[in-house]
Structures are given as C-alpha cells and as structure tokens.
Picture 1: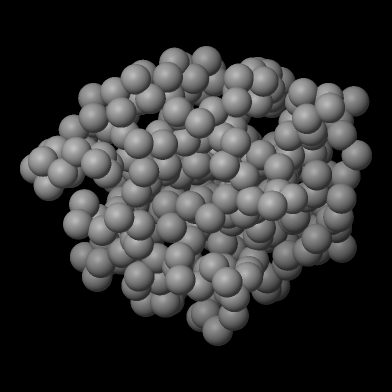
Picture 2 (picture 1 turned 90 degrees about the horizontal axis):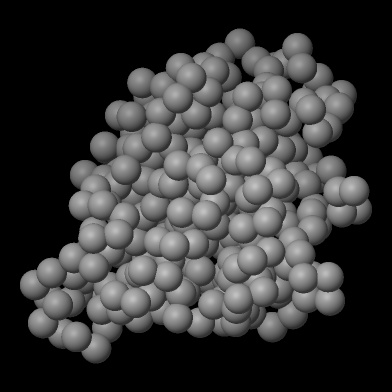
Length: 294
C-alpha cells in the first residue's frame, strides 16, 4: 500500500557527498510514496545550506513532509533568530511548520517542537497535543497514523534523557488514546524502535540516525528508515503467526550506510502491528538482522 522513507538530521553544511549519492540511489531503488524529513535539515540555517538541502530532496522523487529542527533556526544571527526564526526554512520548505499528509492509507502529522528562544531543547505544547489528537481521532482504520517530531518522545539510552522533547509524557498518553501508531523523530543521531510502556494503547517511537552528515555518534553509521505498510509490507515479509487476518502490519526497516560499499544496506527489520478496534491485541516483534537486498 505505502512506502515511507524516514530521514533525519541531514545537517547540510556537514554532508558527505558519497552518502548523499547513496541515499539518492536508495530512494530511486525503493520508490517511496512519501519522504519524511524530521528536522535538523541544515547545520547552521544558512541560505546556501537550505539550497543544498532543497536540491537533495528534489532528487528523491517523492513528496516531502518536513518539520524544522533546532539547527534550522539561525544560531549566531540573533536578530533573525528573534524576529524571523523560520524565514529561511520557509523559503525552501514552505511556511507551514506543521504539515499534514493524508492519503487512503497514510495519515502523517508534523509537529514543530522547536522554540526560537531555546538553542537545543524541544517542546510540545498542550495546544499542539490537542491538535494532533484531533487529527488522529479522525483517521480511518486503513490509515497508518504517524506523528513526526524532531526531538525524541522516548529514548533507549539513559544518557539521552536530557534530549527528550518537553511534554513528551502528556503527548504520548494523548496520542496513544487518539490512535497514533508511530512517532518519528531525530535529533540524537541514534536509530531505534521502541514501544513506551504504560500507555492505554501501544504505539512505537521510531528514531532515525543522521542521514548524510559526518556528525555521527561513535560506532553508529549514517542511517535512515523505510516503513512499509499493508500490501507493501506483505510483499517483503510473510506474515508471522499473528497473520494477515489480525490486521495489517508495518515493517520498519533500518538501512545503514556501508562505507566500503558506498551504499545503504538493510540492517534490521521490526514488524509492528497497529492496534485497531476488533483486533486480537498488539503484535510487534523483531524480525532480526537481514542480509542486504540482492
């Protein structure tokens, strides 16, 4: 049904040309229906960096839903930061900082978690939580319901807790009840998929690594995610014991850049099964490391 390419933290201004070319090649091979760009598109919000980012996304061959990251607000130009913080971003990616993509089988809701008066920390307000919850509640059962933020809504390492988006607990509780399936983010340059505990309904937080920048974490390569929903998932994986009769599954594929081969390869796959009324309950499991596609 749908293929979604999840990219974060491209940090144009620090991009690596071989990685950029490899990601363009991956997009051409996988032909996503939508590209999600989860912030920190540039390194210092300079016009030339935004132009380079625009040239890159124009080569991906798919519609792009983008949200800003903290690096997409000018850091050293204080006048611009305080009076027109998103002007350079808007010139390239549009004035809508919280875009929505809706199709027959996808609902993707962008949330601007940046704040001009903060250098790094993100926030989701009560008004933003309510707006997103209202959109999620109106989704059809056939739609995969995805929320896109920049700073993470849940972390896998204790050392990353300081980077959690402020208001994440209230947001996850409300969005879980409203029907969210996945919350996509970036910011910390670490890919993982996890289901936060203690929610009324299971959802998954999906983080992407830095897509093309040299600003990688130790021993974590450049990385992106590909999501396959419905028939697109079935074409790549046979259903597990929780089979197709229980509802559609979403495959979350982590693709890492292999420097010696100059290409992205599929590193691991996680199958998640969004809960829908009448289903027999959640089913999500690690499919495990995968060999690169032939």
